[in-house]
Amino acid sequence: MKNLIFKITILFLMAVSATQAQNKISLMRYDDDFSLVKKDTSKKGFNQLKYIPLGKNNSISFGGELREQFQVYNNINFGDVPPTFSDTNANQLWHRLMVHSNIELGNHFRFFIQLNSTLRFLNDNPIVPEIDENQLSLHQAFAELKVTNWNFRLGHQEMYYGNHRLITVREGPNTRQAFDGLVVKHKFKNGTMDFFAVSKVISKQYVFDDESMHDGLYGLYGTQYFSNHKLGLDYYLVDFQSKARKYNYQSGFEDRQTCGIRLFSNMKTVNFEFEGGYQTGKFNDLTIEAYNVLADVNVTVLPSKKGIIGFAANVASGDKDNTDNKLNTYNLLYAKPAYGLAVPIGATNIISFYPYLKINPIQKLNILAQVFFMARNSNQDGTYSPGMIENRPRPNALFSSDKKTLGKYYVLETNYQQTKNLSFSFDASYFDAGSYPKATGNGKDVTYLSFKSTFKF
Image 1 (cartoon, helix red, strand yellow):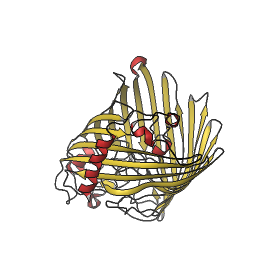
Image 2 (tube, helix red, strand yellow):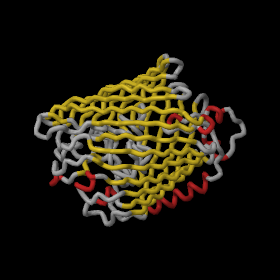
Image 3 (cartoon, helix red, strand yellow):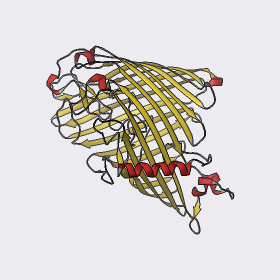
Image 4 (cartoon, helix red, strand yellow):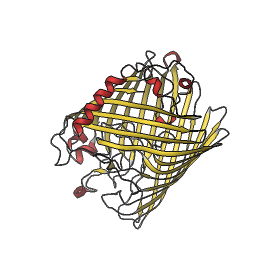
């Protein structure tokens, strides 16, 4: 089945290779804007699939994405892997194919359907379905009712808010993230407000075997703009319920509330972003008291090349005392991996400082270079993956080390947008392991390389 899907994808790639550039292609494909294509009476290539009339005031459109990514890992997780792994060094090919259809019925109804196929090749280590492979799935399928300033959306759907620190689509890993439930979106003057009651879709490895309705996420997320959109304020309140997550390897029922604000700017020279979140609730018999704070300030120093120099810092709480009746570990919920794909470190129980540089040396090329200086916040708690799975120290070595320094992490990311449809990326990173990885395992330095091509239509 896996090889059959890959062969079908190759045929798909040959078919779409002649596709011409089109209108706006969004991160969330249900937000694509092809309004100009509708008015084009001489559509060519796959532009013909962007607006197909179905009688009076009804239409259907099709789109898709093909992504191939080759990765090189040296010393996965600092050289500390489970016994089921065959090697700490690995090369692998990630393959992603997604196709979708958008059906518009008049001005008030639409249906959106998206199929997903992600595969992994060349790596003999065990597959992580949530990240690596989902051979074929119904990734999104929702119905939407649109009335004045209100949208009601029910079904499988991708979601993200703010700067992806609360809920994200998880674009970096091979398999993107979706949710199942109801989202109500309201637009008003200079702002929006979303209400949602959803459950994360659990991505499984094989054909149409995904699951949901295990966790619950309920809440609201609002955005208000000021000064002609030069300043923005996000605010949110969500409730998370789950039995799936563990803290210091202890399982139980979690009912956690998160409230927060994010203040950001969109000005010509100096910009900033400040975000703070506080969490309360219960985990078994423990009272939750946790927090996360981020600050980012940057300056445009070379306007002609969009050259930006910035400095950011992130502090997230870890458990302070394993003997008290409180849990201080910050839960990332469904956030974007803050430190990329090279190391399994999420932004909880962590202190990080990082200068960075962004520049467009030529029109189609974006470059980001940054250095992270990272440490544990508390030595009474371990480190967790972006999916909130504790991976250091081992269960039989809890609280055995008071070391905090994770190390220095050097990151280079590039993206070359050849056309509106086709892009190429090269990423490289090096993690200079500090005292904490060395005290809790092999603690080897990590090297990561990635070559990626993406075609969207």
